[in-house]
Length: 276
Image (cartoon, rainbow, N blue to C red; front, top):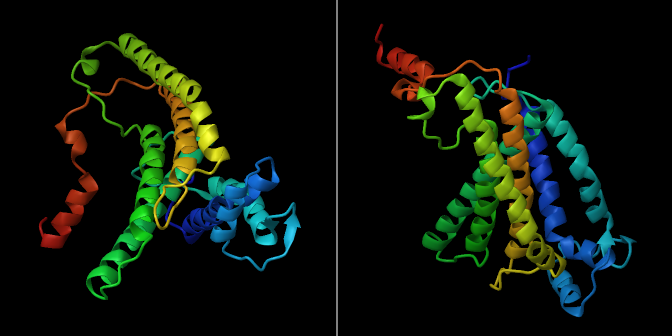
């Protein structure tokens, strides 16, 4: 299995995916209006948000050439991003097709953290150095942080790095550990099912009217975060089932405080201080 990671293509694909997703998301009112939505308020909102008002319309009354190209590029970039992603040395060894999807989403999340940091640094600079704060940095930071929080949960599930209490679990025989794993997976899937069942109507309504945040910048945080919650929770439930299947025949692992010690980091520190 190829484990080398960190190549340029691994980061260009998620970055291109983010750029296309950002364009499609910002121009989503055009797709809603032309593909089933209607309303004077949404139409006026799109006219205010349109980044490229001079582009020729290729579909309906609102979707222009850049909109459709960005939409078509999303699945292509997602496919090649999943195919080119590589497991880093410190990441979990499970590497099935759906694990690759979770890891690619993890790479996208890592770049979102970089973008979020850049937005915050820019706001600090213009506000406290140039005395000219923006109207959009705070809301954009909240928006990006919401996606980071959600997508990071999926990556944590794939990496088995979520919070777990092993004190009693490690005392059980392997067959009883498997029972506990089944129960915890069942609870995750049940929670996801009820959340999707109970939240689908509200999420669909917010997306359909493209509900915004109600500020000067007015980003569509409710319209995007609500559906993303349901999508990511569903992926987390699927990933939990995959984890259960992948780890079923694993040998028992006894956890201790030594698990938190990074041997490679210790060796690097020893070399840095000249210790043997």
